Length: 165
Image: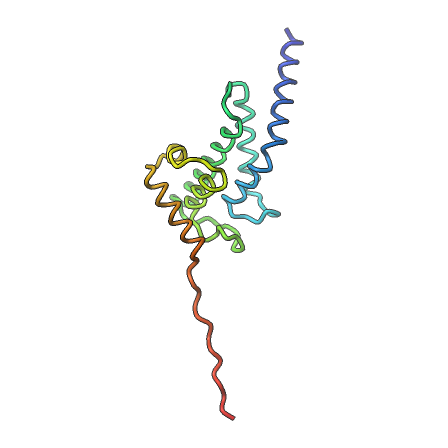
């Protein structure tokens, strides 16, 4: 009995290690996009990833045919959304890196854009995951894309006045 449990535990650990080896990089990149942190300084993204992987490992035996990547991605998205919600009382702006192109977006816009465009999650699945109507997800995604493709203009540069000689 003890040998069987040890064998099961070792197999479970090997399976999970193989999953992490294949999925952790992409999940970390998704988390980094969500937090809009620089890739080389992303402590919030790494915490999100660690939490998602820990939750996936804890549920590993109960997944039974479910995609572990999908499970980890869902946990990552929900943790990010809850963090943004609790930090600001709403989906207010967090403190992303000012160098990030995604910094102009609200956390909700980043979440929807990353799920839809980077992860390829369907509108309906994104809406169900976030508890929003599909039309709202579509509108937020369109607004986020418009913000990224057509950034607001800054003030016009001041013209140097010619000094008469």
